[in-house]
Structures are given as structure tokens and as C-alpha cells.
Length: 633
Image 1 (cartoon, helix red, strand yellow):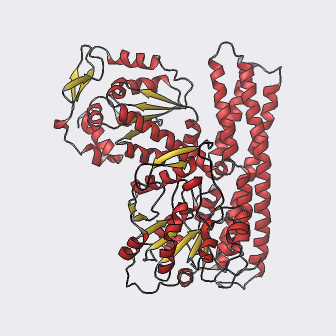
Image 2 (tube, rainbow, N blue to C red):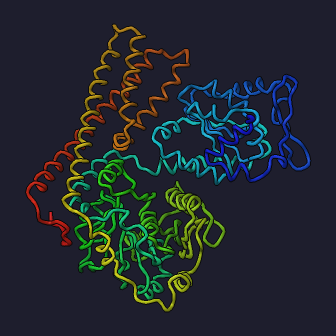
Image 3 (cartoon, rainbow, N blue to C red):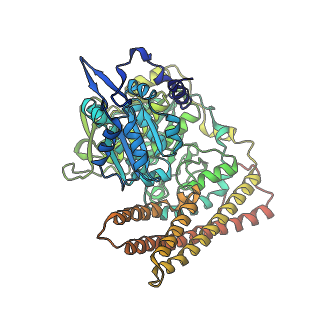
């Protein structure tokens, strides 16, 4: 097998089959030849002329000179625009630390195929710190989206650098700029959109513990998968909703209607009773402003929520259904321990409703009121919804961005709404689905079909359609086989595992904190202080390798470690005292250990109290098994 064939077989095994085999090598726009010193070089045909990709004399020395103009020593992640024949990549691997992650970005498959004759991709990937992101900008976005969710990668992205292979930059500048924009957007999507409030872990776990009686009666994901083969309309509170609300009322008896919490009361006030309402928020304001009414909520409405939502919302509804997804990783571990399953919920409650509708088998999903843009006079929501009085002065708003509009042109939006739109586009690019945007206003969402609501209903529901089925009846049909006490016991055992993890975490951090006093001691030699700091660093990274621990303490850990890694630049500065840097880094870790230790104690107390209650309930109760009655606390 030739070197090229070995690379070909390897890249095919990595999922690049369609791209690599898309064009025969004989028709390549890249021509290889041997340079004066025996190294391969190449020319790339661009329109009617050839471009030399590497030095025809010494491409290795050329690669070294490319890196010499960049300060690469402080980066934890480097994005390389352009593969060429890989000489600069090999040099970059040699010159960067083992902690540095290298992303190789190349959109030209002719160049990739040429490089397959020169460098060993298998050996490059064996380093464990090179990511190959080959393909169109859209392909690259999908690859990065799958990687940036990782906590350790997120940490490295806070110190990122960009390296441009000159021929790529000069002759493919549009693609380079597009991919760079995508990198920043996907970074924002995964870092900024996930929240930074460490107290959310406490509030979320408190609420989840309150919901255990309901949670133990909620159906597994596998019980609801592909069981509702009817179109679904998802109603949002965007400014454009008003133009379609009359059509929605006319069709409400024939089509399943889901809505988000912000528009729930508006629909009821207009005489539209949704089949289900969705919420993710753990804030008390949701119950008070979004769901509380003078009259009773119709019993035909199902509240579908994440287990961490505020209990006051749950108590307002007769029928509740909890779906694990997103949020802190303890939901993932609990879902696994219960054998329940985890549903991706995206970045917003709208994404949650969409993913739920898709999962239960809706053949067509229609969005109404999903503007993701400001309306007239800077309005953020439709009239009659919770926030209908809010108006934004676009001239004074700092985070206004302009997006492609539903009808073309550009519309004013916000960074948050842009992230929400990007989530749709990334998901639909990876998993094409029939999502119909019937908003008739706001921002365009690529990957959706745009139709007026009435036309979409006539086409996908049908003018002669019968009265829709009861969503409540569906809910009880899919959860008939649930064994309530067995679920309670699984939850108890899962919580006991979390308690043990927190106890270990607290012991580790207490031990690491004691090491800090040795670093502070002026009598301790510098070389020993460095060893003690390495020990503290290792303890922190080891304990954070547990996904649940990392998820629970992520905001504090990333905040500290970004500052901690930033101090490394002082190591290379002759004017900075190394001992000062070591003590400063140790103090950051010490403070983090203390803060996380206090939070750990609070989380453990919640879990221990819940386990105690579950022990009493499981030991004393035989009643309540498979009961369909509303659970009282």
C-alpha cells in the first residue's frame, strides 16, 4: 500500500469519504513536484495561472520562518488557515507545547489530496492535539460545533490564536474570513450562551429534588419516541405573531399547538387553548408572570419542562411531564441511572419545544412568532404577551446586530437572538428536518421552509382534517408501564453516587489547599514551590475530569483557569519574578478550592436531605404506585 493509499484509508475511516472521493485525483488543480533539496512542493492552478504553494528550494526552512513572525508560545489553541502540504503544521507541532490544541482548516480538497502524498495524517492525529476540519465553511462549522461543547476545549479557546498559510490567505481570502467568522460565532454559542452563574447549580438541584414525585412518573424518552405522527405548530411571542393569531384560532381544533411560557396567557386570553406549554426557566417570575391566572388553567394543557424549573409553575397544572436535557450534567447522570434518556434542548425554550416535537414524531413542525429580531419601534414581543411593553432604542443598544431578513434585506437583532438563529441553522445543516417558518417577519432561518401559516396548515394538516387527538390522553398512554417506587429507588441510588463524588471533591480540595501554605512559606525553595504548584494544578484538573463535577462548578473553574493560564506569559518575561508568578497562580487555585468547597457543601446538603426523604418514602409507602392522581407534597 502506498503512502497516499494509507492516508486515504485512514481519512475514509474518519468520515471524510464523500469529500475525498468527490473528485478524481487526475483532475486535481494541484500539481506535485520534487524541489531542489528533494522535498515535495506544489503549484495550485487558480484560473489561468499557477501559484507556488511552498518554496521550491527548502519548504522546511520556509515553514520555520512563517512561525517565527507569530508569538505562538502563549496560545492554548491555534487555528491554522490552509493546510498546504503540511510543512508548517509539522513545524507547529514541534514548536508548541503539549497543551496546545491545533485546528487545521482547509476547504480545498485538491490540496488535502496532494498533502496525502507528503505527510502522515495518522501520525499527526496520534499526537492527540490536532483537529482536522476539512470541507466547506458549513462543514467546518458542523465539526467545530461538535468539539466546542467539550469543557477542556472550551478552556483552551480562551487563549486562541490564528495562523494564516500565505497562499491560502492571498487567494482564498473570502473563505478564510468566512471560516474565521464561524469560529468566533461557534465559540460565542458554546461559551457565552451557556451562562456564568454558579448559583444556578444550587437552584437547579433544589428544584429537581422538589420534582422527584413527578419525575418518577414521567415517561422515558424511548416510550415517547415516534408516537405522535401529527403536525405541530409552535407558537412564540415575537412581534409578528399578531398577524397570524386569527388563523391559529381558526385551526386550533385540528392541529396540535405547543407554546412557550411567554405567550401562554395571551393565547388563553384570545380563546386559544394550547395542547402543551414549554418552559426551561428556574426563575420564580415564570409562575407569577407567565402562568398564574385569575381563572383556572384548562386541564387539557400539559406542562412540559426541564426538571429544574420552578415548582410554582408545576403546581399550577394538573398534568406535568419532565424531560431531561441540557443544563448541569447531574441531569445527564440521573437520566442515565434511571434509564430515562437525554433530549438535546438547544439554547432556548423554543429549541426545546422543537426538539420535543421532532422526537415524538411530528412529520411537520411550524413556527409562528419566531422573529428573532426587533419589531417596529424596537419592540421585542407581540402585544398581549408578558413583555409587550418593552421597547428598545436601537441607536443606544450595544448588542444590536443585523441579520438577513425573512423577506430579504437586513433586520435588527441581538446577539442572543443571533445565537438562537445559529443553533437552528447548525442543527438543520446536520439533521435536515421539515421545519416551516410561518413567522412572516423577523430574521430568516436557513434550512427552514418559509410559508404563510394558512398555506402551511392547508398543505400539511389539510382543510378536511378531523378534530385533533387529546395530548393528555397521549401522555397517559405512553407512561402506563412506569413503576413508581422502582423509579424512586433509582433516583435515591443516583443521588448517593453524587454525594460520594462531592465528598471526594471536598477532600481533594482540602488537601490541595494545605499545599498552598508551603508555597507561601518564604523558607521553601523555589524548585519545591514549583512542584507544589504542579501538585495543586494536577489535583484541580483531575477532579474536574469528572463531567458532573465540571458541570456543577464550570463557571468558577473556567473563570479562574483563564486568569491562571494568563499568568503563564510572565514566565517568559525576564522582568517578572518567577516566584511571584508561582505564588499568584497558587493563590488563584487556593481561592477557587475554597469557593468550590463551599458550593459543594451546599449541593451535598440538598442531596443528603433528599435521600433521607426518599428512604422514608420508599420504606413506608406502598401506595402511589402508578397512580395517575396529581402528587401532593
